[in-house]
Length: 157
Image (cartoon, rainbow, N blue to C red):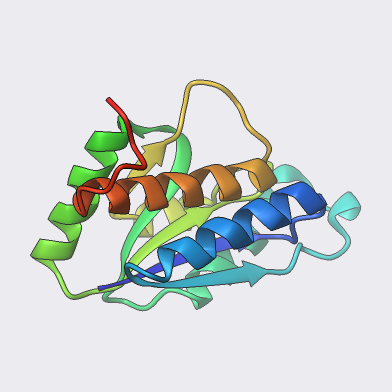
């Protein structure tokens, strides 16, 4: 199984870019992972929130195949412990050979079309993080989950 992380916009902070790259490199030792960056919508100032979400949604849907398992990182999604996330990933790996796709939306969330296409939703926390920070945090959690599955000593309980 392959994991794809698809997100809107560039990461602008150097420390976040370094963190993303660190965990991306670590994850590649365990599983195939693609990061797909979708460019920010142009002329956002002339659009309302719904128009922005719709435009972003169209771009997301272009990057997803009909067979992909698609999970949205969404504040209303299911919350996992790190061990719970590892169990969720293992269940996905064992039950399907489809790509496992995680979407990180823009500042205004996802369009209805993206919600309708999603297999499920995952929340990292009740706290709000910037979308750029979510990328690094989620990559670290994927890495942590993979080390838990391998019985390695990265995670301590």
